[in-house]
Image 1 (cartoon, rainbow, N blue to C red):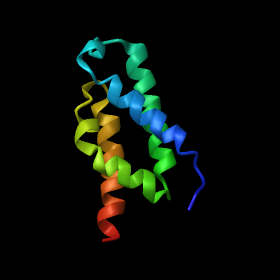
Image 2: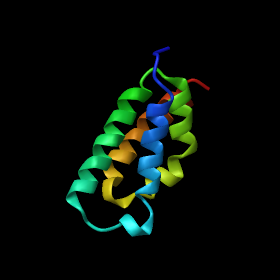
Image 3: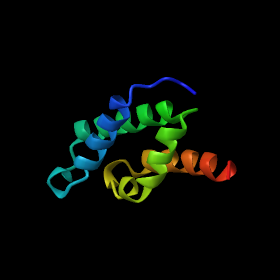
Image 4: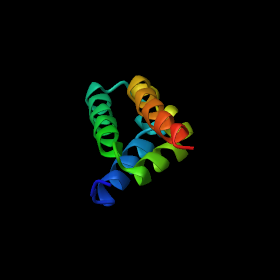
Amino acid sequence: MSVVCVDVPTLLFDLLLTTSLPCYTSSSSVLGELLSHCVRLLRALSRGNDLIQRRIFDCAEALLSIQAIHGDIALLVRDVSYLILSTT
């Protein structure tokens, strides 16, 4: 199991889920790029980390509601769902 500071994934989740609020729905390319990088980092951190994978899986519905980066989120949820479902 890889060692990851729990605060980093928590920070990423908070950032992703907070910026999906209606007040952030403007088509800001900077915000979209920031969120996309957050998802990529979360995806990298989830590799080999059951705790983060489970958290992503549990938050999948909320994460998929983020329209600005729907494609990146879909890849993240797909990867994590595959890993979780293949181990059960």
